[in-house]
Amino acid sequence: MKPMPLALILSSLVAASRVGGGVSERALNAAKIDTMLVPTVLFGRHPGWGPPGGGPVEQDLFEGVLSGIADQGLLDITDIVLTGYFADVGQVFDTAAVIDVVRKGKRINQGVKAYAPRPMVIVDPVMGDAPGGLYVPAAIAAGIKDQLIPRADLITPNAFELGHITGRQLTDLASMVRAARSIDCPCLVSSLPRHGQIGVMYVDQDEAWIVTHDRVPKAPNGTGDLLTAAFVSAIAFGADPKTALERSVAVTLALVQQARDWQAPELPVVAAAHLLREPGLSLEAEAL
Image (cartoon, rainbow, N blue to C red; front, side):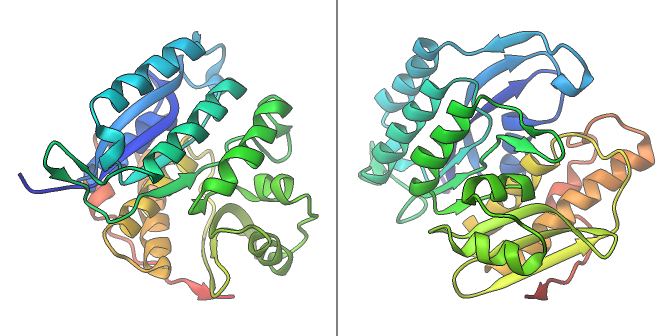
């Protein structure tokens, strides 16, 4: 069997909305990355539509799912850990422990070698947005900051989350770059207003790039989850950060534009799945 990367996703599962772990899984699968989705909540729909139905996954159930994966030996060959929305601070601490187990893995299980020599941990610090601020309890936001971000190889905050994590006032791109570089890992930062457009920025200690495009009114929910998964998919197969940034923004924009053209209320990740593989857009990153 041809090896492929294996990703562990710890995020929301929303039955009728293309958001959270569900859209992350579809984007990774489209790139031929196998997935294990451990839900933190089971909702019927995105809360933006109204009462979502369902609720949080209880901690003992959450831990039980992780135990089953561990007992199968799959944490030894997990290549990607991707975290998203958490409903309980206990889930955050459990996730930190799982990351530590993956880091110490043997990289082989029952004769099957891991795809990558070392795992990659991506933390999407889902905690809030402007102008509303935090939409998770402060304890969860603090847990993500204190337990997960120090364990990450990449974090993917929006502009509000970057400011909250760093405790800095973000007034322009230069202040955002400085804030991102104050964190001890690369950052992919979304929702950046620039010259009447919207941008996504990649920053590490050596380079900084931004891709901007026209705003699309009433974009569906889930674009941040899609952007992160598309970026990770590119990096997993060897793309450099600039190329991964250009491709992931193109994929996200292509799906948003298709939703607009079809007047679709959700990201059309099934009907327009081909755009996950070939967005048909070419965007050029600008050095900062």
